[in-house]
Length: 108
Length: 116
Image (cartoon, rainbow over all chains, first blue to last red; front, top):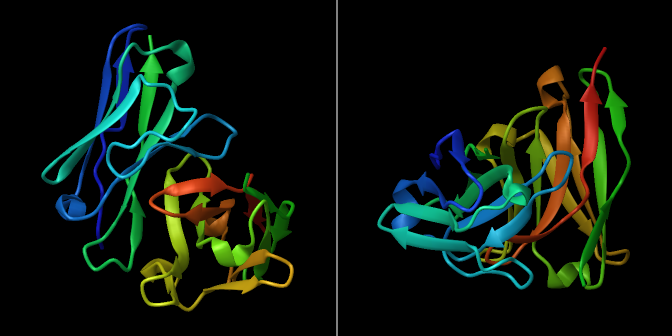
């Protein structure tokens, strides 16, 4: 089955930049979306279609894509950005949605 | 603004079935593409299935084929997810979420506990 691969954890100091990668064969053809989840809460989208930011999401969140890897960048990390982040896409057949394993972002 | 409100927590015995509901407001169910995602305690998000507008059919993750049924009642704008033959590994929070270039709207989640 199709898989998206993320690093399990990323640590960053306040004000620095956090980068989270997500790799998958079909990402060269399918869009990726990113979700933030804080403890006890439902996930929420922070980036969609690789690099689009929904209204209400701070500008410090950005997304990019290169080949089979997409990247979520959080510039000027704040304490409130500490959360789990998941990438999500669809397999090459378009029949199966999939999430990455998730990355825990810790603000030191 | 779209809101998805799910039914309350459930406790089920192994082998039983559970049916979780997801009531839509702010739009009609026919305007949305509804999916279901679950999250076991301390684990990541897992896609279970959802409506695929490309072919007009409901797509199910292979892992749940034959055990899950997703239905919709457009008269009440309510989506349902029924999971049968429950086992302890099905203990999780189940979410409904609407998809359009990403899951932009999520229900609050329904905890299903499977325990003898």
